[in-house]
Image (cartoon, rainbow, N blue to C red; front, side, top):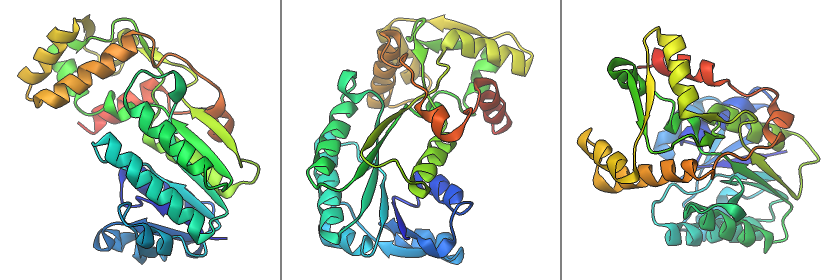
Length: 288
């Protein structure tokens, strides 16, 4: 068996490979990367490194040669229309290389989502379906690290956590838990032609996050809920570029509308109990 991981030098791809190395020998893993030099550490582990660029179908086809399974990690490009083209290239390359099974990292509950990125993932899933390759759609939640990170130390210092998320619940999951779920699917049988919504079985609110910050730090932290425009202004004032501030406010607004409240037991069924909010906060504050 040979497993190809695309985007293997990225955050998620690197974590997937760490988990795969606990399940299969290094010689069964192939890293498909755009920058081969950046993958020297992977090569030193005994992993075969191949060049693959999502914009170049032939390069992706070569990187997939002989693969029984492929983990296709979605492109990080910010141009959604370009991402769809890149993803179609990867699907075509997998088909032409004779890949036996493709797992794709999409977005949880994409059909119901109002976030623009959901369209990218739905289009990509349909491109993969068009190849007739057995698939597994790993529909990932938003990364917990976007919200629970060393930057929370500033909230502890100021005593307030500011968002326009209201009382909305968040089903975010750590990259590490999502990587373990992917490695599990890649090394087990019985996941073909299945869709998993990999979300936190215990969604939490920012009021709850503020309480956990209080408990872990020993300093009182309260969640201050603001309007969309106030949030955007707040983020710009703390140094974020306007487009990033606006995008962040859009995400928080979606949370306030219930976009990320829905849950399933798919993640738990694959990996057991995921990382708790308290543990994630502890790790984040230790890294600050």
